[in-house]
Image (cartoon, rainbow, N blue to C red; front, side):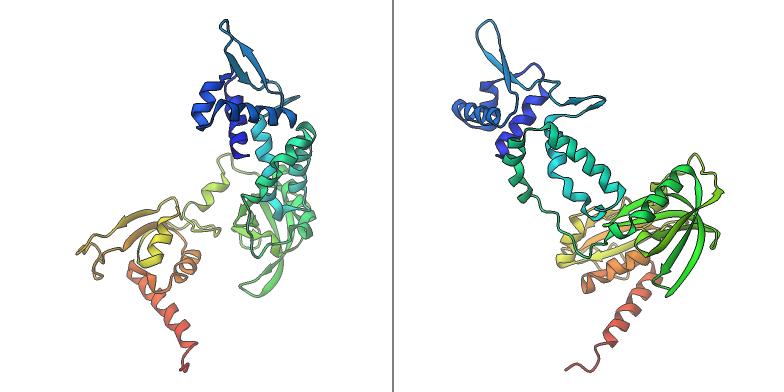
Length: 337
């Protein structure tokens, strides 16, 4: 099945067609196997065709206009991939944002042969989107629609908001600049009239949203992504970035190396007898990670999750804060035998 999928991808990239021998070499199978794949795909409804040169050599291809509908032109396997990836935006089900995707998906299903969709349906079991702690955004569908409309038309909006960390609820007017999808949740970046500053609001904590008669001017050079370049997560900050160095050991080092956690990240493994960071001597197998961040709230939460496998090397004041956090957490378990 995966070979047939890749076969379709290959055929659609070469408008002039591909000879059978080239396909057998590419996939490491016999000509008869490729021929059987062609027969299967044709039975499923894929319009495979071939041209022959003066020597009778066949060049197989897919018609370039197979998947053309008005102004929308996408390749066959792009359409199939879209069908298989529909679950990625499952948290937005019940909102107008997800409805737009659902409409596209329905057009794809109507354009592709039903037998082909059935054949490749089992590919869904190969890639599973695992989620925990999902937010039900269907309950916020009207709020999301209002916020998007307000951002698009540069209209102020009044929101009712529950501030979890401060333990309060309030109503404020804000100028919405746009929505950000981060780690399965949706956030509004807006200028808060109450705070007289740019703020990030979690949509799941909004009680209501109502358009007002007021309008605002959005700067031409404003970009949502620029608001988070110095952040480790979704907290917006205008503070100047500072350099942070952390030494990771054991499994913590391996986990950190697997990802790019921030665009400023720099990683280096310490060699034996290295003493690059005083007052902490180097240790074989240690990974030193440096970051440049303007806000450390989310970074500290992430760092504390590594326990003793993460040690802040600098700055000193952050070393002290992490130490105090760990001591306070340890105090909760005093008296355990």
